[in-house]
Image (cartoon, rainbow, N blue to C red):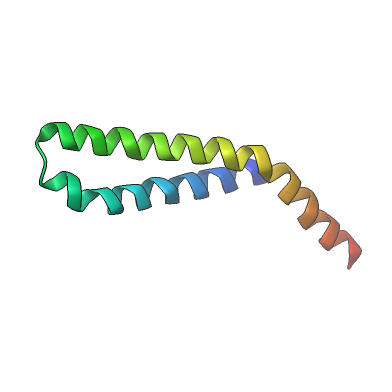
Length: 70
Protein backbone atom coordinates (compact mmCIF):
# COMPACT_ATOMS: atom_id res chain seq x y z
CA UNK A 1 0.00 0.00 0.00
CA UNK A 2 2.85 2.39 0.85
CA UNK A 3 4.56 1.79 -2.49
CA UNK A 4 1.41 2.37 -4.54
CA UNK A 5 0.27 5.47 -2.68
CA UNK A 6 3.68 7.12 -2.61
CA UNK A 7 4.34 6.41 -6.29
CA UNK A 8 0.92 7.77 -7.23
CA UNK A 9 1.42 10.96 -5.25
CA UNK A 10 4.86 11.67 -6.66
CA UNK A 11 3.97 10.78 -10.25
CA UNK A 12 0.83 12.92 -10.13
CA UNK A 13 2.90 15.82 -8.83
CA UNK A 14 5.42 15.34 -11.64
CA UNK A 15 2.63 15.40 -14.20
CA UNK A 16 1.12 18.54 -12.73
CA UNK A 17 4.48 20.33 -12.62
CA UNK A 18 5.16 19.34 -16.22
CA UNK A 19 1.82 20.74 -17.32
CA UNK A 20 2.35 23.98 -15.42
CA UNK A 21 5.82 24.41 -16.89
CA UNK A 22 4.71 23.66 -20.42
CA UNK A 23 1.39 25.49 -20.58
CA UNK A 24 2.90 28.88 -21.29
CA UNK A 25 4.88 27.50 -24.21
CA UNK A 26 2.27 25.17 -25.68
CA UNK A 27 -0.69 27.54 -25.37
CA UNK A 28 0.88 29.68 -28.04
CA UNK A 29 1.42 26.67 -30.27
CA UNK A 30 -0.97 24.95 -32.62
CA UNK A 31 -3.18 22.02 -31.56
CA UNK A 32 -0.11 19.85 -32.05
CA UNK A 33 1.37 21.70 -29.08
CA UNK A 34 -1.53 20.58 -26.90
CA UNK A 35 -0.94 16.98 -27.95
CA UNK A 36 2.73 17.43 -27.09
CA UNK A 37 1.79 18.80 -23.69
CA UNK A 38 -0.45 15.83 -22.95
CA UNK A 39 2.14 13.31 -24.12
CA UNK A 40 4.94 15.02 -22.17
CA UNK A 41 2.89 15.16 -18.96
CA UNK A 42 1.90 11.50 -19.31
CA UNK A 43 5.49 10.48 -19.97
CA UNK A 44 6.73 12.43 -16.95
CA UNK A 45 4.12 10.76 -14.75
CA UNK A 46 4.93 7.27 -16.02
CA UNK A 47 8.69 7.69 -15.69
CA UNK A 48 8.38 9.18 -12.20
CA UNK A 49 6.02 6.39 -11.17
CA UNK A 50 8.55 3.77 -12.26
CA UNK A 51 11.40 5.52 -10.45
CA UNK A 52 9.45 5.92 -7.21
CA UNK A 53 8.18 2.33 -7.25
CA UNK A 54 11.73 1.13 -7.71
CA UNK A 55 13.06 2.96 -4.67
CA UNK A 56 10.05 3.12 -2.36
CA UNK A 57 10.70 -0.36 -0.98
CA UNK A 58 13.92 0.86 0.59
CA UNK A 59 12.16 4.00 1.85
CA UNK A 60 9.52 1.83 3.50
CA UNK A 61 12.20 -0.33 5.12
CA UNK A 62 13.98 2.74 6.52
CA UNK A 63 10.72 4.14 7.91
CA UNK A 64 9.81 0.84 9.52
CA UNK A 65 13.28 0.50 11.09
CA UNK A 66 12.86 3.98 12.60
CA UNK A 67 9.42 3.08 13.95
CA UNK A 68 10.63 -0.24 15.36
CA UNK A 69 13.64 1.35 17.07
CA UNK A 70 11.44 3.60 19.19
